[in-house]
Amino acid sequence: MPDPWNNPIDDYVPPENQRPFKYNPPDAPLDYVYRDDHILVLNKPYGLLSVQGKPLHHKDCLEFRVKDHYPEATAVHRLDHSTSGLILFARNEAIKAKISEEFRERRVEKTYIARVWGEMTEDEGVIDVPLRKNWEDSPRQMVCYERGKKAITRWKVLKRGEGSTLVYLFPETGRTHQLRLHTLHIGHPILGDELYAPDPAYHAASRLLLHAWELAFRHPATDEMVHFKAEPDFA
Image (spheres, rainbow, N blue to C red):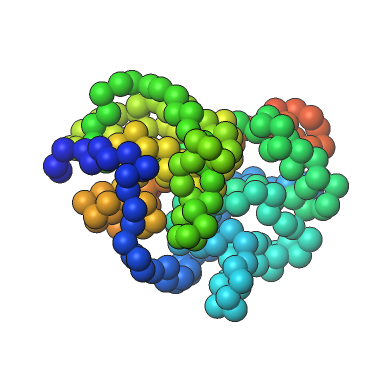
């Protein structure tokens, strides 16, 4: 693999109509990591929307499939369709409100695993770069120091080799595409990223190599800390 691509996102403007979105959801059984009378934790596959999109052909989503089993369940948060991993559902509105408050107050601990372009020289670090929506190139987001919202990601190297790095990502905020943009900003885009990665990094993987690996939070019914993990298929 060539040397890492090091242009910061501020200098990177994707060409028009680059890699158009094609929705082809996988025909995979639901993978329940945990379920009780209050919450459901699932391992979402790559390529499946978390919730229904606006176009009619985007009706098929994880929430829609879960409702076949649990009609009352709704997603508490979302993962990009290209991101796999743990996602949390509530089984009634009171539980959803309680968990949503935990997310708003940043009390939910989230750990992602990603494989990024290039072998990172440092072992860990913090990316503190504000983000906002790119109104001229939706759905992409962008770095903006004037009007962007605060976004912080901690990272730690898991292993290096063959021109890429496997990293843990710990988002302290939950901005749209935060992990994709922050890793890109430091010169290490996530492999297979159809929205932001330059061609060499995009073609280095058949999918976005980003996975929501771990969730930890206080159970809304018992107030006890619970931890869930789901291993990625690319580590």
